[in-house]
Length: 210
Image (cartoon, rainbow, N blue to C red; front, side, top):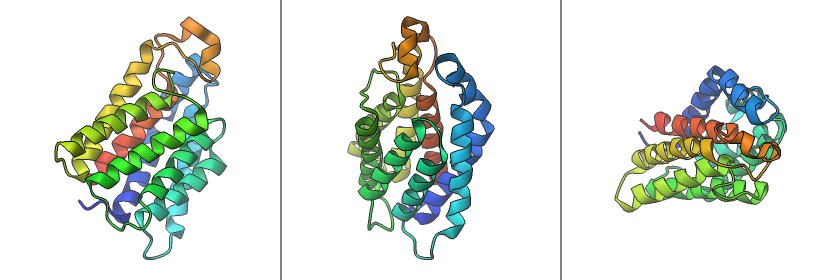
């Protein structure tokens, strides 16, 4: 499948479906080390994203889809997740602006730009037990796959696998950012909910390309 506007739309619709299905699970992860509402907030945001896609003008590019998602996430998702995800999608949109179809290199640019936005907005780094851990592993896996000659869909699949690995790695990390940091060692053994939702979203991107 070509990574075009139809793919970007399918990605976000798919992400909205899975976030909705797994909202309770994300709430449970967040309840252990945060406010307990990450799934609820993300579901509200992606419901708004899905509704907004119907308003896109004909001839919209993938970057337009991503920018629309960014604006809705910023305005609809509560807590820190809204600005973080909104910045991620804004940076991703800028990275592929003007491109009607995305190749392997574009996918790498998209993921790396999203990571950069999250790091800058959240002042977090890999190892801090945040969503950065998922996105950083995704970016590294995407770069490696592209360097090995993988096509765009395969690069996305690699990014999704990397995000899952990154999310799983947060289980044993000591948190250094957000509410979880107040728990100290009591947070060890619990997965970061933002990393978990990041893995869900990137898996939806890969599945939309398959």
